[in-house]
Length: 108
Image: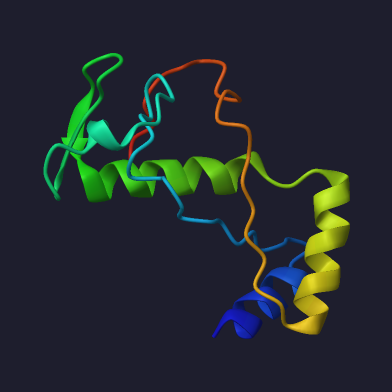
């Protein structure tokens, strides 16, 4: 499935970014505070830094989407192309302070 998606994106002039899900449900999409205490219960997210609240799965999805949308640097594009051609799993992460607007992103 992944190869089919990558091939379609390649033909369309795009690329696929594999995003590491690590800590995405513990990082606040509003202020980027990342702390395990942001998850008082399994399904609940409440930021200890700014008070932002939402379902933990939605918070994780918002953060994964944001990481994917920032896109890779030129260096990372070369690394991704090399690792995709060898079939390696490519986690991609960005600096969590890159959201200059510091606003939570909605889920499309």
